Image (tube, rainbow, N blue to C red; front, side, top):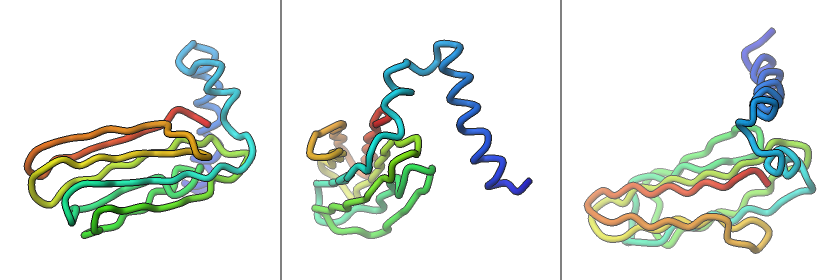
Length: 128
């Protein structure tokens, strides 16, 4: 079995095992995999950031943009049937405040601000 095939097989098994052990709340398991969702990622802060990393889809896909200018936004469609968790991490290229925000279907699900030189900020959502 290929590495991708094993990963695709192991993720549902892991979710089921964690649910059985109480590691994943039933509401999270039930929420995963609904209809298509629109995720809007936003980073605000100094004019430029060092890098931005975000979930590209519901299948653990990751994308990165280096040297992105703030304010930065990216809209991503998460398809139905996947275990969907959105994640966004950004680092500023100098000093000041940097803020990340994740909006799912128009509702803000996560927002965090970090301050300082080369500050790193991270936002994550529960399953949706």
